[in-house]
Image (cartoon, rainbow, N blue to C red; front, side, top):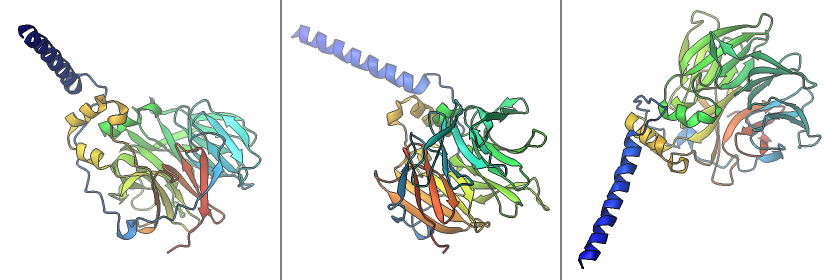
Length: 363
């Protein structure tokens, strides 16, 4: 009997030791993030202008020849151009025919936009701001500003005068460190402008929370940039009395805004990477809890929801339209929306396709 109690005590001591070590790890193990407390506004209900629907259920899927066509651009011949996770930039016909590799950046091409000469301007998360000629010649335009290298070059748009507006999502965290940026929630993002004629780079706005999608207004009076981790769209004025000022255009979105683009009628299309994640919102006011969560295995950390979600807004930030499709079969996450010739083209960070659907009539 004494021997049995002795074995039980040994087992209990071993169990308590393991529990103590696990608790010490979760509470005390050093982590590279330094979170700050932030209380997000209550997530808006999915009703009214955000009411659920299945309008994205019938999208056509065009094989991209690889995984992760994060952004989509259409060239002057109507060909679909997309950047893949392996660094390739592919070009294909509308139905996926005539597939070819235009270039390989050796990094991770994200935002894409053609300039007036037909060159593809690329925001590459690893390599910086690039230009790819129609024949595939690759040129590096910029990799840093003010002595601070771009760590996560993200999206790009181009004005009529050739000025390239682009975002650096984070000057601290890179492509493989998105969860670090999300959990730390510090304003490391930047909005910048590149002048092709001189090579000059101007800092338009910094202190942004994961600066993502970029879109220039139809009259070019302002440029928009999405703050993914603060659930909002920011407007930076380029001309007029407010030139140089940055303000909130849309606050408290029902999800994380990723790409943004301007439609042919002047409205803006926004891709929501995921609807709001309640567990993530709940831990944001508690920096110590986010450190604990960071120490957990990735599969135990808050994760995006499979939910395709696209919004359109006007220049005042009013929601004009809402397209969704929930569930495992949805084309999600959607990371970009591009309007062209009566169609909406959708990109995704994880899917092996580009999706498209007829352009919905403006409500």
